Image (cartoon, rainbow, N blue to C red):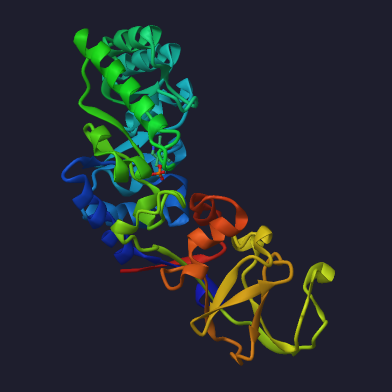
Length: 374
Ligand SMILES: *Cc1c(COP(=O)(O)O)cnc(C)c1O
């Protein structure tokens, strides 16, 4: 397709990804890394991201769904792929045939997977999940949960290779909830160990926890957002890490015009110009991921300077006040990311929208062609 003629695109800096990865690998000091590449690597493109990380030495990946797992398997035949989410019992054959690792948190599901493993004469690989406080997926961190895990561990049709949990509040300054969950996880591991039930891979740390709590590394960490150069939250900014934004959305200006003082701009004329000035129309809109809620709250970098998006963001375009500047049709602007200016950072967009950086990068759609640079 003629992507070269679409004047809006996404640049994915695999060099920045490598930079982030190396910083993190140093920090983790040899702890095994499970790179989280779910949701198309948080909008960065799962396959190129996973291939780059694989070339850097990552051999363990996490995805959310069986579709994502199969897509990744087709590109990387030999890596370990953990599915973090729910796969129905009917998926057992595919899980075994594609050598995927399924998260397990239910006895009936475990028994069905065991039977499938026997049928294939090849155990279905699982990591058991324990709910230590997220209240999402996982066996309860109590005696009943421990019994269930012990029973499943003995089933021949399952290869129980790991056990894990997930922090609900690792991105807040107050660490008390993290310690409560971490200690509960340790208690479950000890209760199982007393019964002779041990695991090759124990893990609980997401990005935020992995940067702050080495005492909970166990055998593996599961960073996602930090690989893409985004701090997990405003509170946990991780300035010491020097993360680089991997995603950058760019566009060529579609039109520049002088607009009179008092004129309304865009649908509904919700914005009126306080002064006569130049306005640039940018061919990126909410269908590309530039959410309409950002209207009046975000900036675009024109000529290296942040200029405000004014009026409502349209489906395919938005308008930017460039003041006295006189950019030309076709000039390149930075809409988001790329580590070029804090006012167009993913974090700034997230803050403007009252959301998290994760939602911003995931939001940028495939209508923007992704160009990968090293
Ligand atoms: C998404 C996810 C991660 C990665 O979270 P980040 O905050 O991006 O590091 C780790 N573990 C589980 C279970 C997840 O769902």
